[in-house]
Image (tube, rainbow, N blue to C red; front, side, top):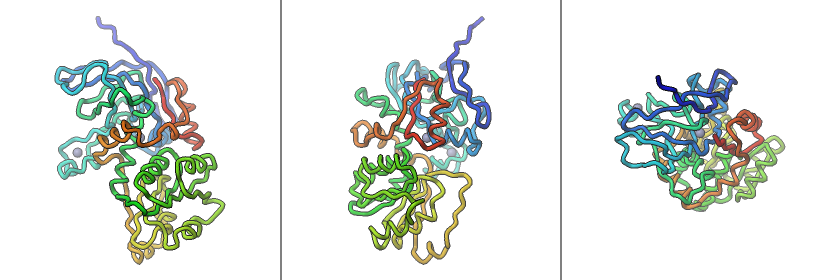
Length: 340
Ligand SMILES: [Zn+2]
Ligand SMILES: [Zn+2]
């Protein structure tokens, strides 16, 4: 008779139902298994979408995909890592066989299995992952920074698409954690002026602290007028980190400007005069998850090139995860980290 080991986890039980309870602790079976003791796992907008029922996930699994963990045990075939190593993971496991994987577009894999969405994730004491999705971080990198590897890799996926040039101008719509990472990377690339549009005053102040040149509350002032008062022809690019602001972004860019759509609002529809895009030759680009950007993300964090502490507002124990999710829903927090 074997006694199954248990662990605490925050399990998805249905729409708006996340329950912290005991589940079976995963056991190393396959050659390439890596069992991580989770140090930290941050709450993502995607977790909020899952709980709202607007993003499909499997009921009965532990959520959480932004993970930093310490290796507890490895399968016999694992050669890159050993017990005690600290790893961040790529949560989106591509199949390597579908059309998109074969043309080197892994992030569009048709059979994607995501940790914390389809299989057990990091809002748990332990998490089982495969060797090929792990990246080691150095001993000097605090776990509170390492946990940003996944969201930063996604932000870098977008940066890779717009390819900012020194001296170009940008508008950021939203000033949540993702937008504040874009802000810092654009600033590091010498983009100026950087204009931030955000409803919440607290977040506008944070954006200014992190180096934004201008900020505006789009409810109080007209965004297009404001932007063109600073950059008469319009900005070189606009990034929508909200998920429903494509129209505002298209109006703010110059002719042949770029619009990057990062935020995800499942109900948002494009509502802009189409001629604006045609006549002004605007480039609208979607960007989804990472784009082979994990190694770069780790490098940026290890070199302390962005301030992630400024983007963090709470560190909560697993039992208080609901509080963290409520804060995220209200947009009153920045990044919320959970310590299982
Ligand atoms: Zn995420
Ligand atoms: Zn695939």
